[in-house]
Length: 112
Length: 111
Image (cartoon, rainbow over all chains, first blue to last red; front, side):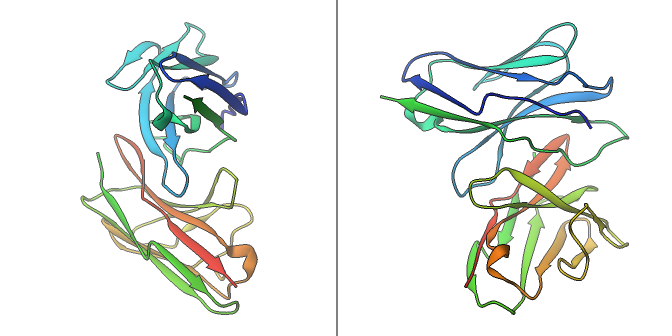
């Protein structure tokens, strides 16, 4: 299973763009990259998923370089409510599907 | 997407007792998992709940301690048996539907 490495914590201010980079050197051909957000005492919430290049939805963008050994979650103009733990996971979305394995995540603290 | 509910949302239990946690999904799903999140830690996979057969447990988790049932494609239960304070955690149900979704969790405190 591909292992991921993320910064343990990050600090930002309201209105800034936040970029969280995840390293996954052993990513397999069938693996997708998925990011989750978790608030205290809640289950992880799906943010975005991608395979290569760039994916954008209403809350975030995901940038994946050609070698797919890393990915960057971009949160535009963060607010206090974006304070949470963000997890980067890689996993097979096809027939080889197993449960996603969580790393330690990145604790984002947004200040006023 | 998938909407997942869990019961109870939280409980306080005495050591030596058992608690059964229920997970209900709003649609049929093939893959269903149970995770544990200890205080201040990340999520750890306990087992895969297989419909119609025994659950598949991860290293460090055994059926006698965490028996799991999966009677159909929308429901599963996880029992935490003979509890000790070390079992105090959040227990989360998770399913796969296009991607992987998580329930709200059951917060368990064992005294």
